Length: 387
Image 1 (cartoon, rainbow, N blue to C red):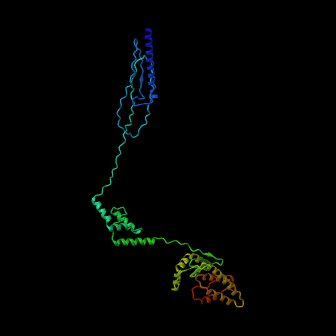
Image 2: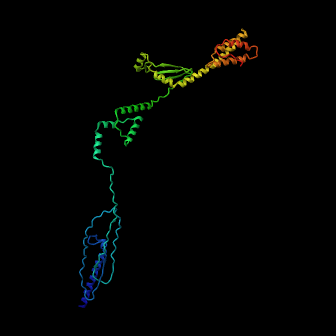
Image 3: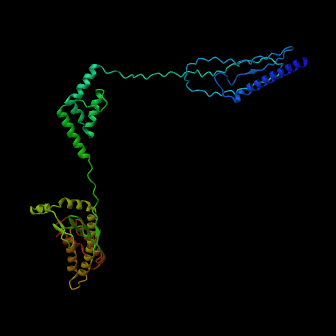
């Protein structure tokens, strides 16, 4: 019996120890194998104690794990910025092998996450400091908006340098912004309008027109071909106009143009292109004056050459006595006007006398002869070639 009883005790104790070991191992690896529920938290710590009785081994019932009481949900707090909190890794169950004893489950303290309690700064609402419009001001503003005369005066804006300056000064004097128009009389408005229109008309630039393009011909003339006429500037600066015909055709075709206004003006004795001719003469004045001066200088030079040749022929005419030839030279000098280019001609004659009839030579003018010849002159200038 003792052997049988000892075997039963050994079997019972072995079975109990095996059951407790299996249960301990299962609970140790339960967080990694079993899904986490709200009754068993993954961060719960277990302590296994195994005790062995000396006399009688009684298999104790497997203790039940008391479920964790449900916690009331805390009120949801919306933080300004939810901090990122690293969740702690659940620690593995510690395994200790003291003497066999009853299984005691001690729950570990729970971990609570406290949100950031920093409060968002309070925003001060915008306060409109614009003064409120009183009832009297609102009535006055509505009356101004509905008054036909006030509407007309506000719509009438005079442009131009004349009236705009007084308007700004008047508005600034009463504390306006410069765009508000003060009620004015009709005479003042008309006066400022007239001044503004006059100033604008006087300051407006006319359309710019290019200068006439003239072409120089080999014969020294300059030609301009316009839509109204063809102008030819001669070498002496004079101008010849040739109007275009009233009826113009395009070559051999039947198309063309006819200006009836020109025909009526010509019939009444008016020049339809008078303004065009004046424009041409004004813009070619410099060219014409230059041509005239060049022509006059050339004519003067040619006249001086002819005069010298004529004096040479007179003095070399030996068929006449020297006294008659000297009188003919004096008459050439007297016929030349001493104003303008005539002074140059007289200088040429006097120079010829000094060159071909020098003082002291047998052919020179005597003092009595010069006195007698100058007595015939009416002007104050005297013939004195030897001075």
